[in-house]
Image (cartoon, rainbow, N blue to C red; front, side, top):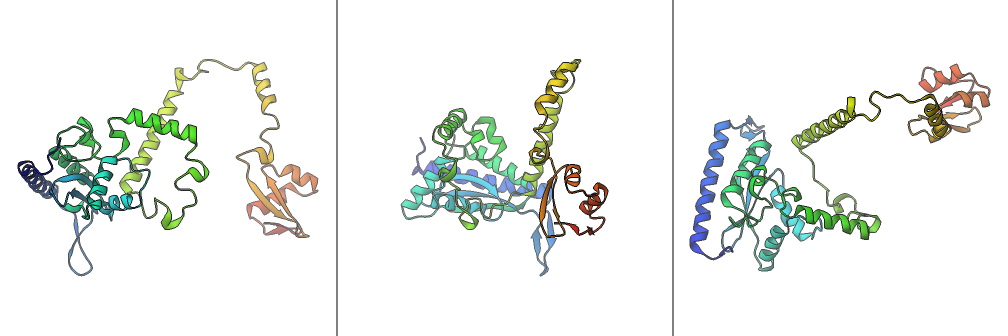
Length: 311
């Protein structure tokens, strides 16, 4: 158990924080700071990420380490104030609530700023490993990390020691109670500033990683169904099988039923609007129109033909 008022314990962590701060700034200078000249001749950082630590205002013991940009350091206070149900780090929220209930506010200390996301990530991970976590019983931090996972930083369910059990309970609750549907959805009817995700933007690095992950997933699927992994590898459908497949699909994907059909609106000379899905041939035959000329109207090559225009 953590002795909150043990002077030796508190002093040890103060020295650790001092060491980590010094190490972080040394790392920053070793890689070179990225700066530019601002509009008033002052130096500005081109990288916008920073690392921060939450302290107990009474004991001065740190209880959370994070990284981010913008107002990320203060989002934890907003989440507790708004009582977000989706908050995954309950120990952190409980600690903040306890401090607020005692009439205090957590001390938020910025370790350093102007880092790239990767460097901020490394500093955050180093601080967590040095200070230790409550889950591992090695320190005071409430970060959800265990063993080797502490090297990856972050504070998500993927690093929680009871991930399987929590995931099972969430799945069971959603399935039995349908909490994510309609008015049971916590975001139902919330727009603009009322929406929990309002003002949150994904960084360019996060979007880049998402694109790479998507490409990797598509590549894995392509490989999993290629060559001998394909169920039809080295086989051919018989003529009878092809006829059956044709009969089953016949009439199911015609016109409006075809999800890939293009929707066009043609306006007749009398002002009547006609919707066309996919094939224009049947429509032209029914109205005794030239398929070639109507095609030019649809493609925008001519504005009108005999009073027919594109709506």
